[in-house]
Length: 239
Image (tube, rainbow, N blue to C red; front, side):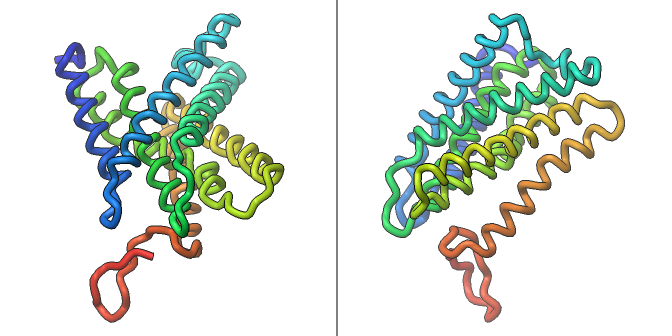
């Protein structure tokens, strides 16, 4: 049985809703506004990516999976293009969706909104790209895609979260560098997964690098909403 019609769209809608709620929920302030911004930002990111792909295709370059599995330079070029388009689209969606910072809650706002945007982008992408695939493969892509897309966006999400007190010029330079890093990780991951044998290890490495870096940043950044279990055995608190 293949993923077609309303059952597939319903499954993606449920997965997307669960991810958005999990990403945006805040036990102190709820998460309705963040969830709504995440949905709108994710749809804006998807529309931006589709517009960019349409422009590239009109220019005579169709960035398809066949290009990734083709010759070496063709595959590298396609991977770089896909990474730059999709990460730029997510950056645009997140920047549009992030609300004005509340006192003391900027990092929390940015991280939760970015995770919700990435979830919507990933599930919507899977809903379109995995039509006609087997249910096991398609559900796995839709269910885990939000994690991959959120991790790949981590470099510029952290820059946005730490934007307070930074001049506009410095912020633009940092965002530009972080975007190139995210695009490179994305491109390397896509290029790797198209390679037989070791490709899955390369893809895992592309996701593990930002995950470890994000964990280290969260451990040192004051005020980041990371659960901490205190040594005395008391309940988990959030700092």
